Image (cartoon, rainbow, N blue to C red):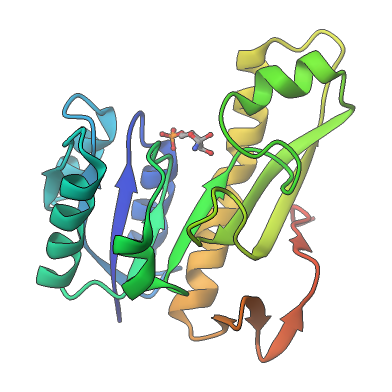
Length: 211
Ligand code: GRF
């Protein structure tokens, strides 16, 4: 059983999707703790309701925040770190010791639209498609090797909220799937590349909803 920690900053619906997947035994992991940089994050209530230890590490100084976060991860013998809506960029302090063991969900079809406010930027650009990506985390923001993506259509009358919700639905499917692959020993990062079942993925898998 893989000891896992989940880092987040807000509502925590991706966190909830992971909690549910672990509870339903789809993910063979134990969530040792969740860590938020925001004391008011609703995800903290979700974790408490599931009986999971919660930590708030919100130092504005990045080095202090990351050193405390690393200490908490090591204290809980965490192997896999999931960033589920964690709005802070990780530096070498955490990525160094955890390279190849940090997964992130990003609300765009990377490498397009790295960074924040992806839904608004996609609407402003008049894109026809949008989506989300799960990747291994490196020190370069949203640049890590891609694992899996899901695409959604952009409707002409889409508001930012409507588009965000459509993407979020897909996030809740692909993040637990990638975590499941990792916990089943099927997913690895090696020399900057992604391997699934021993096969190198030069392109991310595209998630297709089941029949
Ligand atoms: C998600 O869209 C995630 O991709 C982005 O922030 C949002 C977090 O949503 N980084 P939630 O907190 O998981 O509901």
